[in-house]
Length: 390
Image (cartoon, rainbow, N blue to C red; front, side, top):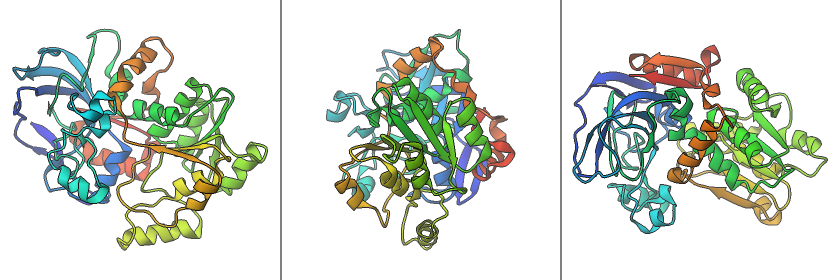
């Protein structure tokens, strides 16, 4: 089969690789009909996630048709149309039983690697380093799906297109959980750093959960425009103003009730400390650039909540811990507990509450994926979201 493989920093290639096989009786094989490039994939592309190996198959946002099932798979059959969550969960462990799906104890065969960095291992992820399982990803023609009775969301074959449901694999639930973690109450003001795909869904979700005003912070005109037109958000271009002071001005001096960092480890900024972050990351003194997170903590009102769906991989410097303590802030984060959200959000789509395809700016063939990665990274041609068709 054809698959997009990682070979190093800024080096991804479409290669011919062996077809996936049933390894465990709980596996399924999915023929992929749509897959997408995620902002998290750029962390791999840019060389910031450790334990990648040459030839690793990328991609964790995918869906398709079941073409083979292991003998212990009971809930799926050949021909079923499914969306596959980016997290891999066993369904039986302490954490899965408490619906903390992204913290599964049993899905990561390389848990010892993650334990060295984090103390304990989260769940495995598709296509996202050997530290998080080493599972082949979904930017390919086929994928092996472990624990097939636990993860995939089965769809009716008619009605909704791939473009409408594909993002149930990651970014729609991720944006929704980010908004849910923000403890939004009716009438609240919510600020969202990053108007990329996750940020756009966080904006939509914040309004679903009762926010009165959402403010989006970014620097790319196409993203800010999308946040205004589709998300009905007020916008701030962080290159034009002091974000913290602007947010104070927009909230009568009090600050947003909740702040969402939908940027993560490659945040940009114009301040001296943001420039220092970039230099430290390039010198491998600091693994992540937390400029957006710092601003969110500083801007959030006293007693408010900072929600962090943005990906962080390791260690960050110069964190305003004093602001967290002395303003009595709540900080909530985590990889998305996908199975908690996929079906309820599918119902939102079916009811017409949201049309997730608004985020798509480019469709490409799988063989054009390397160009898609560079276009997405460099924000060429007003690229916000790329969907690949194997």
